[in-house]
Image (cartoon, rainbow, N blue to C red; front, top):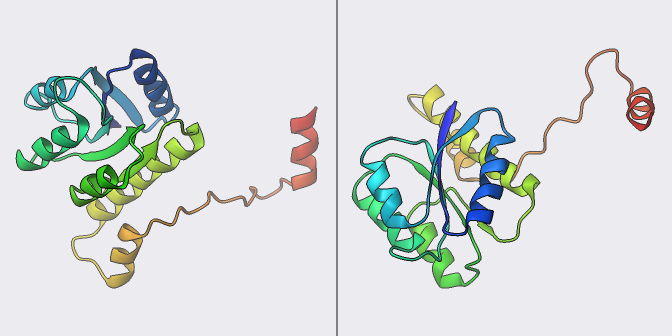
Amino acid sequence: MYKVLIVEDDPMVAMINQRYVEQNSDFKVSSVCKNGQEALDLLQKISVDLVVLDVYMPVLDGVETLKQIRQQKIQTEVIMVTAANDTATLEATMNLGVLDYLIKPFSMERFQISLEKFIERVTTLKRNTTVDQDCIDNLFSNAVKPKSTELPKGIQKHTLESIEHY
């Protein structure tokens, strides 16, 4: 199970992010912090696999928090979840290696895509000690692979739709 830290100053948004994270059974929210400094202090004590990070926060904003995470060589992936929609913030966070960048408001489906990107990256890097170009292309690709729509053997689409409708 992957451990997640949510860094968000708005309690309602933090709660929504936590619900979105916990929709995926591969993830568990370890903690929620109200600002970047609180998050950095916590990351000195515990390790997490993923940080869901807001930009606009008091004390220490998300971009500066991300810089500190990288400077301190804290091993974690970061998904930015923010109202910041300016290209300067986007570029700064991309240069600091964010896994994904979601602009509020976003759908739960889009959030789940970010979590799936995380799983794919971690799985690929753990599974391979060396990589070929196809592997690298998949890691750097922003294409989202749709979930398989193929039904299990013995289930027909029309029958399944009838059952779901009933």
